[in-house]
Length: 401
Length: 98
Image 1 (cartoon, rainbow over the protein chains, first blue to last red):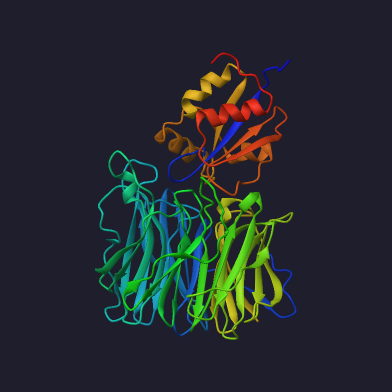
Image 2: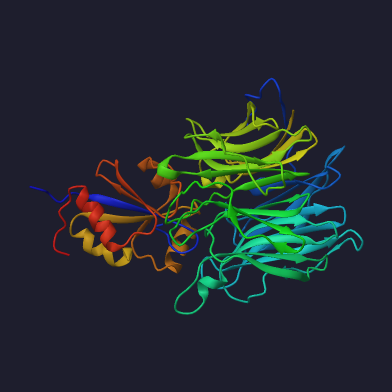
């Protein structure tokens, strides 16, 4: 006879709709890891590292104190990190481990965004941005990137400086989720913005995408490439790409048919890097409950891709980054979840031959440890992450290959 | 759906608890739960650690735990009321009159 038993149901919830809801070690003989002093204060997180065309490194982060969030940045010079500068502050920001500010830099200026709550709904927030012109040496007032005026989720931004001084901004846009009696899906949108923050062009790139995975973009010889996690009507959520070629976006297509069918969101977006006509994309999947980080490469500006290389399976929770060195080597960052979580870099040559791992730091599977971000300059990789072993603090390191 | 299901399953000694995947502080977690109209109990990260659950790869994820905190089933994606009842039945649970 079956007896009633006491079974708790743990329902894990997210962002959009439901709750269901450096320690230095292990660098290989081919690489040299150097932990850099961090310009970010205690209680900082959500960092990104980015380089301009000259190879100057910028680090951005969010610090929190007494209910107020501050977005700041610092530039790395030959004397070390410059005095941090504040881009924006607010007490009504949406501060989230997976959806966090981007800083874009080029010789003509900078663009930075943050997320600001727009209504009572927990996940209703706008993308706010400031644009900095080196000519005027001033930031604009904050602008709202999207023009829908609808209180919904807007975020998961990627930015790409364009040759004419404008910036391509790509984001997930939840305007359709709030329309009418039959709400639509999360959409992928992009716009080109000038230094005044004025939208020059705007597009919807995909009408149905995964709700809460990061977008990523890079510049090829043929123009910008955007990668993201798609969402079919059958809930297949594979990685797709689209290109802006001669002013027209190509039809989105998969970089590989993982056929990962999930009626949920992995909160784990892809990462793309490009150099000349070469493109590399790394991403996470967990089909059949088997976590996997994969890498594909392209020698034709991302119009076609190689068969995937498995960077790691099954001991990973993804959170990938991708960079291409001057040597042509490709570096993928990912989280190793074997025993203690570790931030790892894996390097491959131009033919996809594995060249070695570098352990950057011990980390945590906790969401508060965030997503490590990498950027290549020459044959070096700069990486930033959040150390949560005590008070959260942004860390940064350089790995020379 | 979980709000309605929670008191009904309680008659069969099944407890529904929620976990904020984003690991927000407890006060913010409770505010979010309130904003979202969640009426059943929610757990802080500290309490979740005691259950020994690793973060799921996909959201939403629903776990069925035994009284000994063993994971008996992992349900990925949005679940209907019938999905939950079916999963409990597959674990050998006879639900009392709801």
